[in-house]
Amino acid sequence: MNRRNFSHIVGASLAFVLMAAGPGARAADEAPDALIKRTSSEVLESIKSDKGIQAGDSTKVIALVDGKVMPHVNFTRMTAAAVGRNWRQATPEQQKRLQDEFKTLLVRTYSGALSQVKDQGVNVKPLRAAPADTEVVVRTEITGRGDPIQLDYRMEKTATGWKIYDLNVLGIWLVETYRTQFAQEISTKGVDGLIAALAQRNKSNIEKKS
Picture 1 (cartoon, one colour):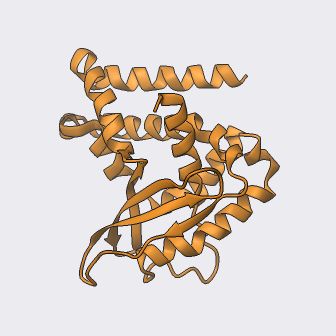
Picture 2: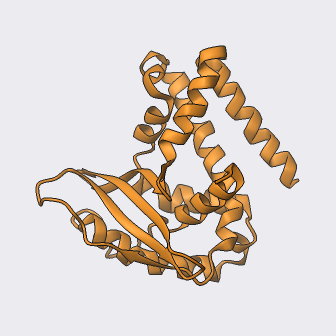
């Protein structure tokens, strides 16, 4: 699977984790598989009703991600895992910049894929976990167009509910994919070099859409 196809599939997959945390949401005490199942239909309706998101409007996508996604994702853990062992050597300022640039990269790279979400649905598979488990993998399939697409979530239990820290699309873990790319950049140019490279990619993505 080439990078373009992977980006579109992951982008569409990210759409399914846009949690509609409105009044009465039960995120704090809801089982992880139930949370994914409940919110998927709400997310699909939200995307279908917003023409801007369907058109890949990055401003709207960023606002939606900041308001709906980030509260349900341990993005610090996700970024740290993608950066690997070099994360601990990075200064707090470098860590903040890495998180900011990585988030921008994910949102801008995958914003166009949200327009591909139309008639899909989600089939949540039975959860294989013990009641006391604090980390689980919720396995699902995206259905509706062609063969089902495998989509798994690595989730952790926190004081404020279950949070996602990695995605597996068709057998490819998101964090592992970026860890390989980031390690190559850091090995030649260091952490600052990785930050600069991410910033340049984000700038290029903006210029392409302007």
